[in-house]
Image 1 (cartoon, rainbow, N blue to C red):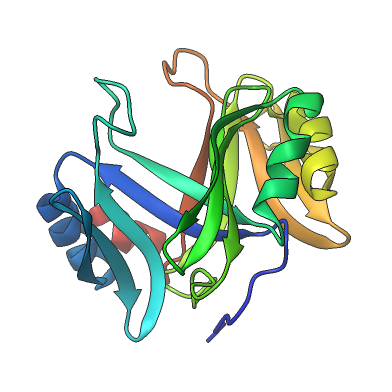
Image 2 (cartoon, rainbow, N blue to C red):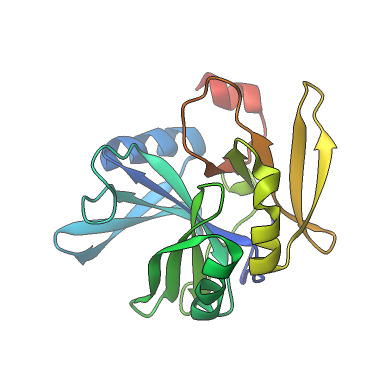
Length: 221
């Protein structure tokens, strides 16, 4: 079991689902991965649900909020990348061609975060851990295994992430055609990037993958 107690800066550390149907999402993922959810009030009648696989935290879930998302925003997963200093990271963004959507702010005593849009349009969070470090399990069934940038040209974002997190990258041909980008910190893979298939009408986004012992059996559920 890959238990995690801290996340290196520049690594994906937390996936978070925003949805119109929190009860339905809890039931779905509970049946799919045996996740359990615990709710915490976060003000104005809203709750934040921490998702657990056994005793380990694997992600979060909250209701889509008109205060935070434009009307018509569909349910989506949102990915956080660890940083040692959210303010310093956010300060680099404009010069690298990105945009700071939400400037750095404290999340109680849990950590400090900012919301950022990269030059190809994908939005993500940076997380400076305080009391909450992020997921406590990686790469095991029912936990985060990979995060992938889906965009028209994900390689175009490589200079941005290189400047922000020091990532390098390589580009490899995919068996079915096209090229796959792997973002690296030294020899360690941080995430991937893949062109969206023709005809897919979606904005650029970071997509989390969750591990399973049997992809076919999980898909059948």
